[in-house]
Length: 257
Image (cartoon, rainbow, N blue to C red; front, side, top):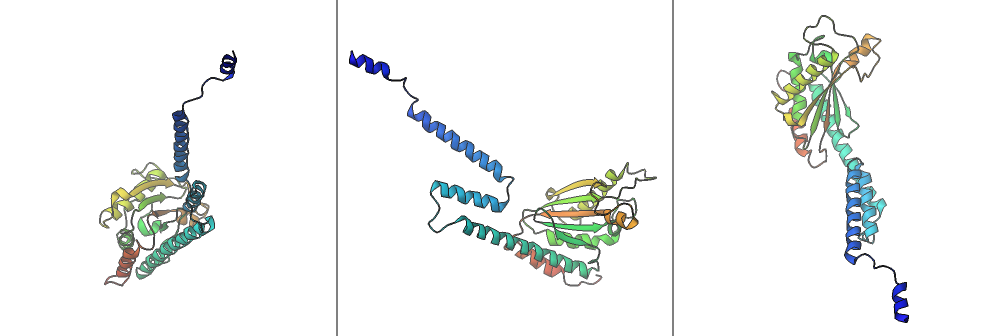
C-alpha cells in the first residue's frame, strides 16, 4: 500500500538525457550563426573585442590576457593600416606632381578605409561628352600602375554631373546616362590599355545626386562634374611593399612627362 502511494506521488518521466544535450547544441549553433551575422557588419576592433569576451566566457583566455591588451593590438594594426594607405596616397600625389596634375587630382581617405581619387571633368572630357581626352591617358595610366598590385582590391568608378539638364544631345537621354558613360569609359581605359582586371570594378552613375558644392555658381558646377575612383583592398604594410616599389619606379620622370 505504501509502495503504491510512493509511485503515485512521482511525476511523469522527464526528457531523455540526449535531448537536453541536443537542445544545448542547437542553442550554441544558433548563437554561433548570430555572431557570424553580427561580425559581418561590425568593425574589426569590435569583432576582436567580442572574440576576447567569448574566450573569457569559455575559460580559454590566458592568465595575463585582457580586453584592453587585445584592443591595443587591434588599434596598432589599424594605425599601421592607416599609415600604409597614407604612404600610398603620398606616393601617388608625387606621381601627379611629376605629371603636373597635383593641383587637379584630389587623393584622400574614404569612409571604407581605402582611397578616393577625384578627377575633375575638364581633365577627362569635353562639355557634354563622354569620350576621354587624349591628355587624360598619362594620369589614368599612373593611377592604374599604382593600384594594380594592391591585393584583394575592389574599385568603384563613380560618375557625377552638375544639375543642369542636357541640351541638344542626341547621344544621352539625361545626366544619368552621361555620368554612366563617363565612368564606364574611365573603367574601360583602366582595364584595357592600363591593364587592370575588369572583375575588380563596378561602374556607378550618380548624375547630380551627390554634389560637393552648390550648383548655383559656375565654380560649384565645375566641382560637381567629376569622376571618383574609390578603392578598397588589403592595405596592410606587408602586402604594399611591392606596390611601393612600383610607385617609386613610375615616380621617376620619364621623357615626355
